[in-house]
Length: 506
Image (cartoon, rainbow, N blue to C red):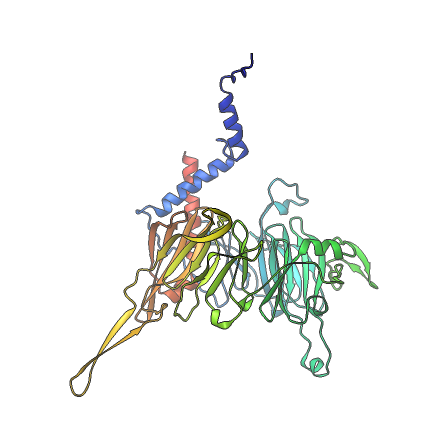
């Protein structure tokens, strides 16, 4: 009596199994197999015997875009698959007119675990925005037009596509609305600066259209963006203000509309998303929304991340360019060691951002130094956070202080000392830092100018500790490497294909 009954045999194992299954570690889960595959792929890429070579080269007068194993050329008119061992053309469209030019594009992926109305929704598609305000959904494999939406008439020019919530909520933003010179000279005032159209994707559905108006947000507004449910409004004096975008949609929406349905709105009768009516402005902000947060930063540079939440700004004076303050979002308190200044003397400034691996760390990149910083509690003070170095990656370069020797007419030897710039072309300089999330690798590209050409090498580092795992010299000169950087994506997908073959063999 009074003693707890002994646990049944194997009960402990069952509990452990259920706990691991809840966290996605069940041995037969597809996720476990996928993680093992990626682990194998990482070993294949980083092992010493793996060699990389140029398997294909192309040139384009217009920018080259890359999305999930597909290379887009000629303003998205040509699509090339990089999955196969030899890249092949998926589709080639006829040359389009200037009125059909594509301004921006986003790749849509099929959501998991949802029933979709059309079979085409289960395959990847490309959303493109044309110069004439058409939003098109194209098949990513054939370029066939799956859906067409007309946004608006000539009153506004939509130019940009972005995600509010990746693969869920999409925002189409107009260029800044400006009056013709004659109208400005006549003293006519323009109060509407931007238009935003908001969509839910797959299935593609219209949420609402709204204006960013000076009368609501102030005369100094210069730009606007939407990200993660936050409306970000930037002002000319470096001020950044944040508003709850979801609350704005709910509070100021006058009436919901469905694509393809007839509407009678403000004296207009038409079909939602069809020419010539386009989309109704069904979200009208009549009062300034509640302000969530504001900060002043040089050139409106503002980032939020870390745990607990912090933000990064540069004090709003030109003399502070290159100085970064890391502050608590809760009370605006500067973190201990929160002023990060590499004191670079370089033509190109250093840059800083929160690590995209969701670890809460910070990446600070200078010409010859990469710092990975972490936020941690101050000892004996749980309310304060300090910034500490997790690890650093240093460029391989010699002492930057050079001596020049001159001899005067009298034979006297004069030595002059001078300091090179931190990003002097003849010294190895970091140009690119990127994170590959599936392989958990931190990759860097460092360049050294030798004569007329720049020699570069691509390095893979362990994301957790910064250890150099592999260095790959790039045979092309740097200016060429910048134009054919998609080559490494080709090699990456070729290795994915090899891994699938390995899985089939096993």
